[in-house]
Length: 436
Image (cartoon, rainbow, N blue to C red):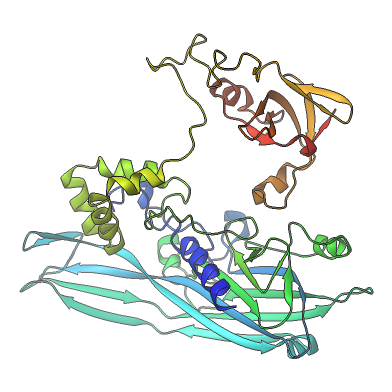
């Protein structure tokens, strides 16, 4: 279980810092003035459903335990830590000491809390597991008169878990886990202050030493009714180390597919979108020396990012380069006479705009309307929201392996025409569409 748990923690690390600091990684950037959007559990005094601020999250998933199974709970979150700059006369926004800049900023401190509870105890009654993080204040001298003051507030939370046996002959149980921020705080009404009393990017890793969890995206037939009754609020459980069953689950505030993993090509954290390493690396390279200096002064993680990008070797950039999905003419023209990506001179039999595929006895081609039935096993988890939606086929394509793909745009998407004009489609296999 250790190696699988390490994979869960690696994916959890990406969740922790997704959106922590956005390109161009400077405190002065407007988009870095509104921070922490994922997995934010605010103190109860600030919670307000109308403005989308919540103090708790819930996950429910299916578990097939064995005798003497123990459930391991790992709660992980960030805590905001103010970093204030005192120049000897008072607190200031920024100061330069010895040629180095220091900026007022909210850093983050990682926290991890673990519990182990026998499954038999969870079946007998709900188990309440409180935890807390003390307030801290640290001072660091940076020069003769300048001091950095780092402050964090006390946090308190509780994890509540229960296990309910499922009805029917197949066995199994539903595991319910509630994570709540219980910190006491007299709200001043500002989100900036509330974030300093919040659990940030909060998520839970669930693991069993015997037995296994079932996929919520592709459960066995007997478990589908139970899966349909599970309630997940502000987190979603995905398997780690398996696509149908596994001993480890990550309850993530960002929807993922089963068995997610960090791409081996990724050289380090970029914080601003987990699937666009190449473009963020290239854009960071274009920052001026002054912009890089400000980014380094903003946050130690930003400084490490800029330093890494400055020294990135060509072979690492080559690894980041993805598949070319669309080519234009050599002049850069995007007009009607641009060179098509499939090169009809090489294979005149290929024409995605006129090719078709037979589905349920009906020929499907560009212009056909279909109803979507995504296969959720091994696919993008967000495709679950497309089930039953009607779409228009824009092209039928075949890849080098001879596999057929149906490119569509959603009929109820107001941007469908624009996506069609730019060749930005959603792709499905023929068995995932139904002619209408």
